[in-house]
Length: 180
Image (cartoon, rainbow, N blue to C red; front, side, top):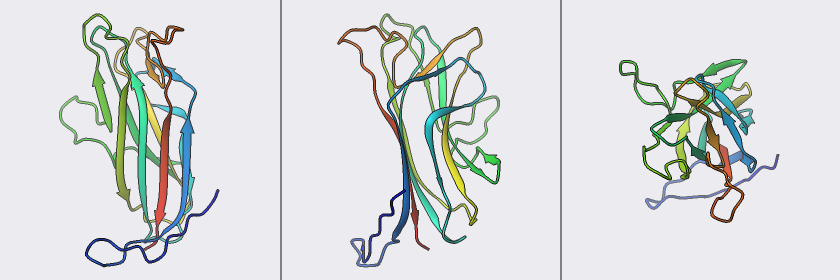
């Protein structure tokens, strides 16, 4: 892992901003899919960093190319954190409301012809304070919202025909530790 050091960075008001003291990145260029109705790790989209101090903050940015089958099906992606083997899944999701899924990103497909062709760009950016000096892993997970093998996809669409009318994409996760 390389370390990026930025000194004397200032915002428009002239006050100093935090230094980036380390960073990590994962880039996923292959495809993944799941029919699981429970959140499942997206292989290749995790970053682990050990904070320099309990006051450190992490800037997290992700982009996931995501697709669901046509004919009105849905799927989700969420960002989770793992510290000491304990997974926290509620620091970047929507509020609880009845039976609705708490997730970072969510989509429905339409019930139109060609609705199985689009990929959606799911993204998120946040600053998080883990308040630990233990290794912290940030990772992305996905799930299908329907049983009976309705599959959701990363970096490809459900139709994935071998032609120049279809594409494959890349997804990424970047984590930067900001000095206290």
